[in-house]
Image (tube, rainbow, N blue to C red; front, side, top):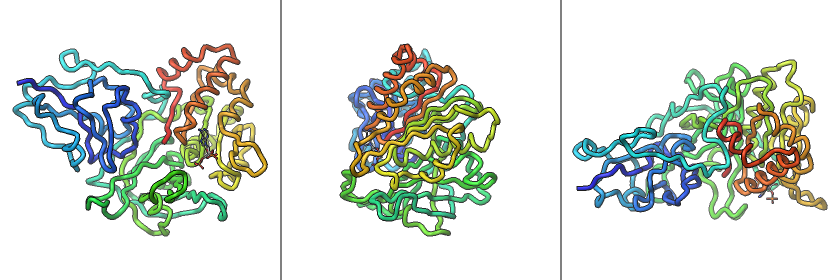
Length: 403
Ligand code: A2P
């Protein structure tokens, strides 16, 4: 009887962020409207998906008889993982990264960003609250950030945890569980949102955090249906109570050094972690923190740029803000990568600094363009991009969060 450790994903923890499917180098991970699953016929336990997963849902294994592995259909139907079968588990090598006696994990590096945090990052708290025991937060603010007559309804939503511990770091995310049931009669799964406020709250000392949420509307941006969770959040009134899980994320974190240069590149709601990091640095208020933050921010029009007002008020010696608008009537389409190219020598100078950390957040489509621009900037600065990129990943100095 041949047994093996089947790779499975815990549906009770998974926040459906698609990271595993994106990371798997051999397309063993897929999903339906509800669950992410691993094909036992394809998965070779290479481990590439393990560390990028923000929740740890991916790191689950069940000892099974080879011919009776859990099928994709079974995995799609799960709300929880099945119990271990002790009789089989006792005789099957344990899956353990780096354990010589278990399955050997080769980490396949296919990612653009690091799977590890910066060396000096503060230690994040993760998975404090799960789907079975979510935290409850009260909405204390819900403001529209985009112009009233623009198509994009992007909101700044502030959630307060009162006396409940909910420790977060800049760059982390939370999951929100929308109320109600999906068409199959099961509770909706949680949706992930990046935190837009720094670790000590939307205002220093408050036990709250903010989110940047774009209302997903059927027919806009290629969406087939209205977004269940974004519409729920965008319509919330002050005083409403929201079920929250997390916090999540252990790599997209900022260095805990008050003077390290940060190159931040974002589109739309991808500005959330950049706002958090910028505000963290502003509050640290180091007298020498000058010419170290550079931001590239893309939006359709100035009216559709979340946080346009506050960003414009920050002194340029504190943050060098470069905006790229794609839909201003009468003007050519500009993307963040175009803005990066226009500032190529300054970007090259930042890349040459071994203390620089790069953060990219927003539309997945920008990844190629941003990488090409960074590579061109490195070349302009006589740096070898492939080896610099590899070093930055190894040192936790380049991070992508795209969707
Ligand atoms: P576009 O006008 O082509 O959609 P959104 O408002 O949808 O969140 O988008 C934020 C910004 O990102 C918009 O200006 C959008 O431009 C831009 N964008 C879209 N695709 C890319 C891409 N491949 N690279 C960089 N920016 C992009």
